[in-house]
Image 1 (cartoon, rainbow, N blue to C red):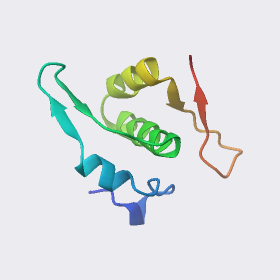
Image 2: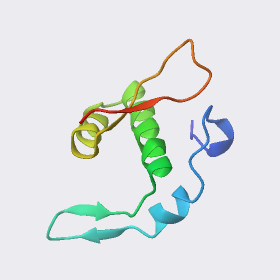
Image 3: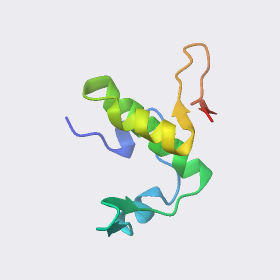
Length: 86
């Protein structure tokens, strides 16, 4: 099954797809470089949490350590919730 914005409970932040497509790989750092807004960073944290639900949480843990944003689901809330971890 492929996830798209149409079948996600929380749609990606506006402009996130454009920023991801504009990412540049820095060979010296061995990383992809993106310029994201706070809202887009929260969308990335949510996406990594979803990834961790079915595969590995390593990416979400690293994102949380490096950028201080972690998605924490709250069953009693109707909205997404992210929090600073730093």
